[in-house]
Length: 322
Image: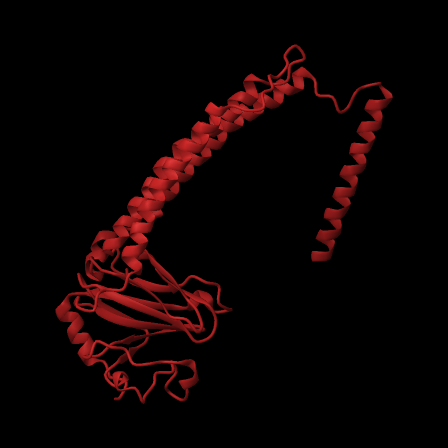
């Protein structure tokens, strides 16, 4: 069937090209200039472009109306508010520019359609125009970049050691995640791919005394609400990407390299269930790099809860030594 479809498409292309050649020969035999556009044809094309603008903008408005309600709910992290603000500001700037520039472009196509009685004005340079279309975008981009850099720095700078926080190492592997919590010493033990053996699937160094009280969990990990969380990411095979969409957080997991970010959860899982009106809602950690055949299934649940519930859950988890 595939061969038949391919052959049919090839025959249609050949047939179409032959028909065009016949039409050209027919026009030439009548003495017509087949490559010269008449004023009537120019006006028709210009009118179609102008009408197409309203059709296109109508489709754009329909898309916004239809899909707008399917966005992510409110940010579940403090820095996510800044990211949402930056995203909304960007759309606020580019949407009117998108509409206005396309409107002007297609209006000019209509207004200045080909006419044998009109000659286009040519000028090679305008300092005023150059200044306007360089300065205005530069100012807009500078504002967006400065806001973005400030947000980036706040999430990339490590949480100060003197600040009470949760320290978690997230290890990625086709096609699973493992979270390791620092123990009472607030330090993570050493880990390396060369130390992977048996049940030690993430290569934690058992000779490092800082490793003994670390706690490894799979399937889901818990976070206390209102407490800074410092994440450290690593990969033991290929490049993955740790993506926590509800917290507006994402970071590549690179073999042989540790990466990091931090955020402060501000909405518990139970509260988000009420916000989304979805009792089955759960925060989730996804892989946002196509890392192999089962990439789509590389997920880990995230539970955000009160400090008391978090402490209870963490106390129930076995240490690395255990």
